[in-house]
Length: 202
Ligand code: GLN
Image 1 (tube, rainbow, N blue to C red):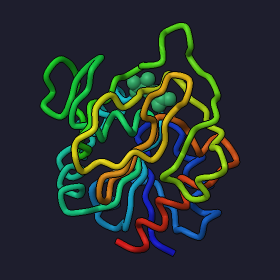
Image 2 (image 1 turned 60 degrees about the horizontal axis):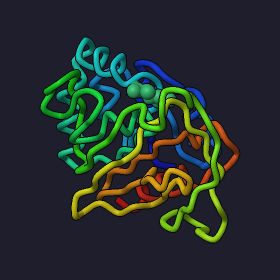
Image 3 (image 1 turned 90 degrees about the horizontal axis):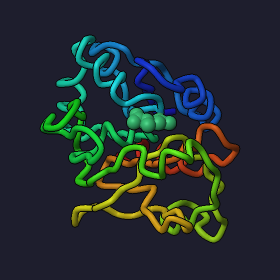
Image 4 (image 1 turned 120 degrees about the vertical axis):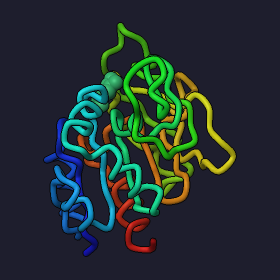
């Protein structure tokens, strides 16, 4: 299977390793530039985006991550990982580092951090997921202090929306994809299958 790294600075790394392995990928944690150079694809896990960015800077990984994305490495970001991939943030930061911590960037989207409201730290929902495999089957999703996608650039495809808030919660642009929710925490492997296929065909 393809070698798929999981950025292992902070967050729910093990859950991604487990589901990727179950799909036949060779999943491995990535903490240094040399490990990044050896993977065919990369997952940016959920966690705390401000912490992950600080650690990426401390581990000299921010520029190598940006260079890998420019070079066409397939990357999937979940929750904090979506925030890290966004070119523009509201509620703190962006690829230019204005108004907060920098992001890695690459996805032509505006992402709102902690978007679903302070009172609602986490919730579950059934998504309309026309862009995922088996679109007729609703996608049961878990959101934890989750971002949403507020604006998308012309090359971005919407994969899923959260119907109650009527917001975009999964996107793809070329070799990059991101979800607001945590498919590694539920039994549904369609998002990871989609990503493993993307890595295989890229
Ligand atoms: N709110 C977190 C952040 O801004 C993301 C939460 C998550 O990844 N579950 O990084």
